[in-house]
Length: 108
Image 1 (cartoon, rainbow, N blue to C red):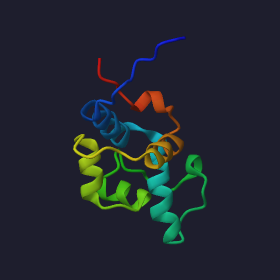
Image 2 (cartoon, rainbow, N blue to C red; image 1 turned 30 degrees about the horizontal axis):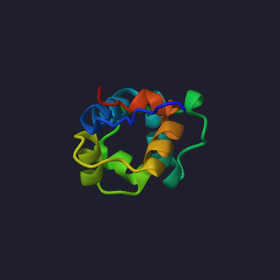
Image 3 (cartoon, rainbow, N blue to C red; image 1 turned 135 degrees about the vertical axis):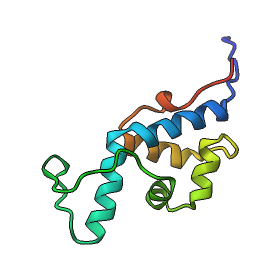
């Protein structure tokens, strides 16, 4: 019978990866821009032809709106103080167009 080794998530390093996604991921920026401009009636949904300049990064408060949580929750996730729920991790992956393995870091 095979033996399995339990893996533990390093929430500090995983949080760092989440912060880097917030600061650099184009798909997250598009989602944030679309949600801001669409709700104001100014988004046609075609980011490649957009007349608005997207910000270079997403603020924690903008990301909090996407996840429907407080800015403090985003801060806690990024600092590794609070584990991110499975549903939120999967949503993060979906929006950012990355794999879960690109975000999660396991302890050695």
